[in-house]
Image (tube, rainbow, N blue to C red; front, top):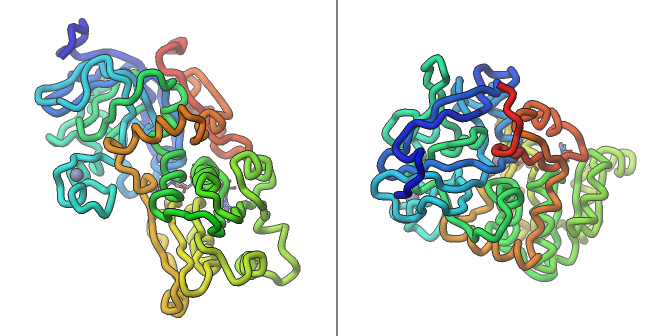
Length: 390
Ligand SMILES: NC(=O)c1ccc[n+]([C@@H]2O[C@H](COP(=O)([O-])OP(=O)(O)OC[C@H]3O[C@@H](n4cnc5c(N)ncnc54)[C@H](O)[C@@H]3O)[C@@H](O)[C@H]2O)c1
Ligand SMILES: [Zn+2]
Ligand SMILES: [Zn+2]
């Protein structure tokens, strides 16, 4: 426990509230209750906006609850902790984790997955593990949590299993991106796929996630790394992050040729690894079918619209292609984040390069609009030094 003057008391601060699906966020003052047992209150310094925030705000996320405080790519400083918290203390620099790691449940102990069952049920309902929320607006209405993080608020409360303390010398403004996109792509390449020297790789979708797959594959010395996108603006990023080839999946094909045929032709029979970083189920099928017979593995990272299904002919799997998925890059947030931060500090892992836009927190709705522009990878919002507009 700290001697912070706010400890044990509700804090009034600025947050961006999602009141209704499909509507802009409302930047206003809210009240954040103190953390209960096994909870941590964080002063959020920086957050980025990820497609999953936009997906939920659009109203198509079956788990989306309103009114709520979105945001899950954030970093800050622990303000105070509830009873029984031992993994972080006030003053620690931290990253919020939407994929918790309790280190005790069946999943955590399996050694086979980074998924954790500890807070999954309540997290999906937008509440803390005791079934209640720590947020309310000035009218006294309860606001839901989101993905166990809710980083679109100057203060947030998370479960202790959903936060990791990090090296304080790493800039929070950059490492907030390790809360989702960069870690997801990089982990998918180096952990889920475990790409090896000489492997051939194709990445569908050159956003933050896809470009991070590319940087992981490059680090592993893949012999060919092909970025497939439908936006030519991604060509410059493909080079910058280490791709050897760029294909525009709509305009770089011969008449009558499919993207699958083109990739198979370029790689003497197909790829060792492919990654879907688009969320489009047709692309997922192409990614699988572009894999080499006998061993090629395709990894689904993209989040498809609610109700969508994937399909292929079973023969594709019978003949040795493998379909896999990856959440948060297979990375265990509490035990492995330290290694990623070290990689970042050594210059092995690019993070700063993804920050294409910076904005004061009050302009968060523009950050959502930026998501649709080709040159925007990530917009980082500064929560503490923003002029308040309320
Ligand atoms: N599994 C996870 O843990 C996890 C975590 C974070 C994000 N995601 C998901 O990963 C996906 C990528 O995230 P992002 O932030 O990089 O998104 P992004 O929108 O920045 O990037 C997507 C890219 O795909 C390209 N694209 C769209 N349709 C295409 C097509 N038909 N063929 C080829 N390229 C196409 C777009 O031009 C864009 O460059 C999203 O679906 C996101 O929700 C999953
Ligand atoms: Zn995300
Ligand atoms: Zn667990």
